[in-house]
Length: 61
Picture 1 (spheres, rainbow, N blue to C red):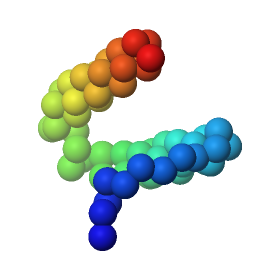
Picture 2 (picture 1 turned 120 degrees about the vertical axis):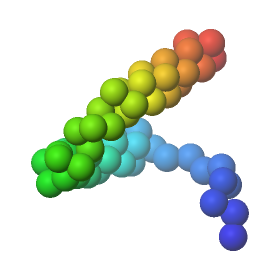
Picture 3 (picture 1 turned 180 degrees about the vertical axis):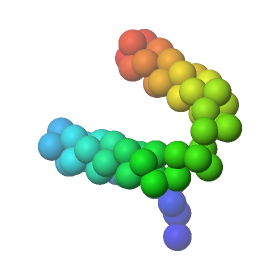
């Protein structure tokens, strides 16, 4: 089983996936806010770094 295989999604499938991840993130944040509050700076750094990298790759293509 190769979990890193390539595949293609249509624009609406990608949008649906993103909405699902957004809803999951909101649900986790609302339910476990005390657990993750001490890790907020680390999570923000990871978020900024990953979004910056993806934006750079998108811009270069």
